[in-house]
Image (cartoon, rainbow, N blue to C red; front, side):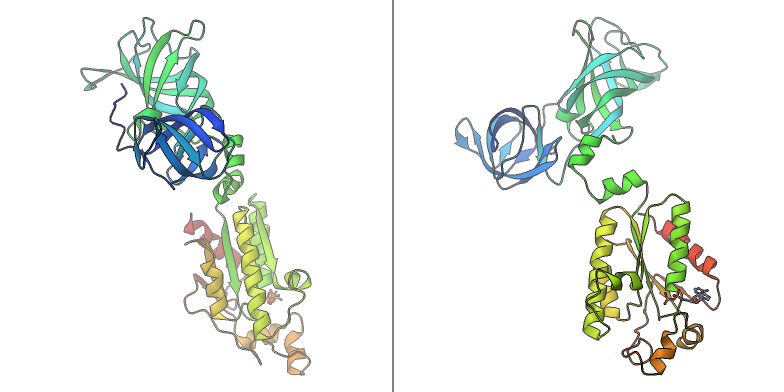
Amino acid sequence: MITQDDSNTPMRFLVSAVASPNKVEGQLLSGAMSRKESVAILPSGQQTSILTIAEQGQQRDPAQARADLTLELIYSVSIVAGNLITPADDRPEFSDQFEARIRCSGQQSLLPGRMYFLEAIGGRSEVTISKLKYRLEDDSKNQYAANTLGPGETAVCNIALTRPIIYDPFSTCPATGSFRMLDKSGGELIAEGEIRHGLRRASNVHWQALDVDKQSRASIKQQIPKILWLTGLSGSGKSTIANLIEKKLIAARRHSYLLDGDNVRHGLNKDLGFTDADRVENIRRVAETAKLMLDAGLIVITSFISPFRAEREMARSLFEDGEFIEIFIDTSLEICEQRDPKGLYRKARAGEIKNFTGLDSPYEAPENPDLQLDTTLITVEQAADEILAYMEKSGS
Ligand code: ADP
């Protein structure tokens, strides 16, 4: 079943022997490999680059599949025979359930539900046919219902493995998309198969622990990380709304964190005052902190006046498209001053506080916020709900 045209497929190298932590031998199964290429070692996910490529003592650059090669790596990695080397930015996938096309190639029938051994380039596992979908005849033109698969017959099935393997769909890369099924007792060849596609991504802890990123952290929490960046005058309602958002998120079992102006100024930013320069540094630190939290998979709510447009744009620039939601809590200075929940306007008017936003320090209102809420028209509850609805809609 394996086609031998492996040159236009992704680069996949199977390690057969390790001479030292940065020198390995093996076979280039598919694609082309070049010097300086940035590669990943699978399944560990460690990254390194190719320093030299030799085929029978001759340097090659690039080398083409299929070839037996000796590679020198730029950085030492822990690597063992059976590992795969692939481009760092074009890795195969990892799953334990597949839809596959299977040809019963031995003397025995293939029985759904029976346990067999599966061998593939990307791993070994026990396997059962979880569903025999249909049998194929006449060069795959006709489909028939079937309960078993006799010698020489071909079918499309779902298969379930007891441990995940590394794979590519057969259509992408035949070398890593093929497998064999063997009898569990005698090791006799029962069938050969081609993976059509994975039925789910494996949530294998080893894979994720070794290749942990924002997505893997967030996927454990089953949420899409976001920054809800609230901006507005003192007393506009940022903290009140932010607190309610967080309560609602926690009630919905979402993992969030509220970064609030007052709290941050007691710790991380306690060395900063309210001059323009300190306000800029205040927001820079908050934005960087929010980024770390987003990276940890959290929904981060920030509640800072953040008066300058440039700093809000700087904050936005730290994030990927769609991650940063700028919410303008648009309450007029008059209303904020009437509310004066912390008595700050009164003190500022009395000259006890200098550089107070809206009075003797400017507030640059957002020109194109993602969301603008007038708290004189809606309640705290409505504001929180509107923000959460916007966040859900913004998706990934
Ligand atoms: P900020 O964090 O923006 O400085 P606060 O949330 O501390 O503002 O204070 C806002 C004040 O306005 C609170 O006393 C709050 O109860 C009151 N308020 C009245 N209506 C609203 C509303 N619709 N949304 C938010 N706050 C409101």
